[in-house]
Image (cartoon, rainbow, N blue to C red):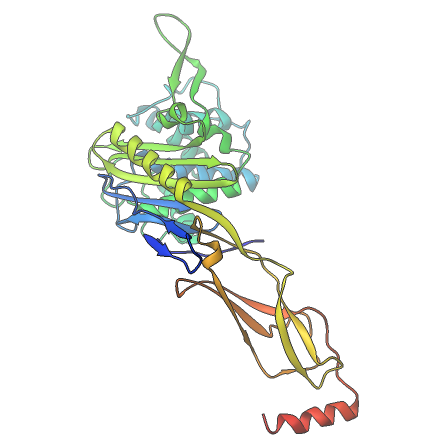
Length: 388
């Protein structure tokens, strides 16, 4: 499994490298008029750019990311199934706000409700799912908060499944980005719903035409940028216009979260600017390779006098393009290294630095098992160690 490390705003405006004509230019993040934002690489855990990312904000319908995460876990744990029928309560039917036009006489399944919640942000679908899993929305919110705590979402508290206004209902741009990344990573089988542009529930028909009502995904970036494949919009009067937008270009995925914009156009433009900035000026690079020999350590009292020092974990980071060759490495040996040495015993540490800042560290292990030397060799090294 790849080790995820975080670089906080490691931005180099202009770096004059020692090699002639080697200039790396990375401008500051774009100025956007929102309450808070974060640009995040979920694969490496890197915050590329941010502003007020830990401030508590009203998440509005972005709440439904956690509702979905909780539902997906219930499916994974076989508590419910996609084809299960769901009873629609009077409360779910009348909750208000965005809707997939449910009523208590409809034959509805869990999958119907998931699509209604994700694609058209149906508050009625969110409540119906919450009641189906937990009996009522209050108990479901307890599950949501338990998952938030497990994910390390330190500035989040949920009181409902839909995102309707409540003083005790809040989150932060960083918490939301982390949650979005976990959904993408843990539940790829459900992620396709977030890029679906329209949805029609066959039982919800237009009274005039008698045809199913077609509703459109409120994430307009899905239609503006082919690399965008999710994820969720939100709006209330106090929250303003919020957006979680994720895109993948080649092998890199980024997540942009913007909150508190004054209009839907502003939130869309802000998210687009952040994504373009991230893809233009940053890249994922393997900084440490698993199985690679990074040096040798002297061995005492062993059948061999030295042993290769090998990394066991691969480390990927998001760094400014052009900065990879500027990374410096150093090795510390946990000495003296005395035989016998098992393969799982760390014997040193590899440190990677960029512009004097530590960007990655990992333990180094012996490349092979080193057995004890003969009695004479053991006694000889023991004597030498007295003077070390």
